[in-house]
Length: 250
Image (cartoon, rainbow, N blue to C red; front, side, top):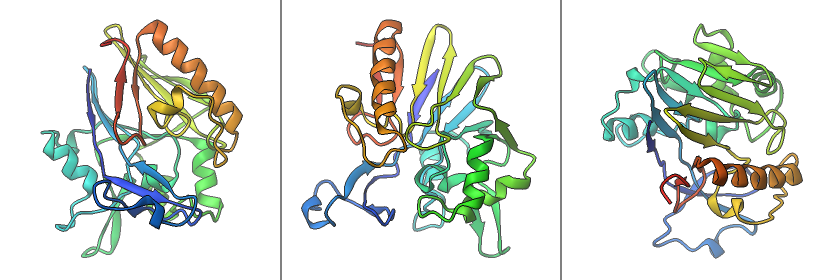
């Protein structure tokens, strides 16, 4: 398997749930609102024998040429966005699901960002995104899934195509999911916002912003030990310095 971090940059976020670009070389975190968190927004592309997989979709921002950032990042890594066959979604908070669709101003409608891919999402999470007025979600971006033939609704746990395992944790958010991709003896683990950064795997940290912070902490500890024993490769969506950490290599 080959892994490609698709960084969209660093951002700060506070209680408003607005993601504000942050330049780690020039900006001062102390000048942002009290309680602001500094995070990377970093989807991943994973190329396996069977698929080109996107794991979470980023913010859905476009660059100065009106090209989706996630599309540009793929092209920069010599990956055609039209070649993507699967999109795995840990949950539908807007920093993970904004890139699901792209609005076309000329045609006045939205299109799936990866038209040749199947989108895999927890069925209860999609219901929640449709029903709840919550600043963490952006229904305009995710509504396109509701009647799409590309949508695959997932139960709480299971296996996709015999090599991708998923599990609903209800830790960071009520319907949050994590994924394992296994091929040729290698295991990739994506913990989404249950396991967003390397440092959190190594500390007993309870996040106040989690639905069940203690459960998140306990799961991180369990995954870290299991990953160490089984030589997993971890993918960290919000880590500025270490998007990929592999016990297999070190």
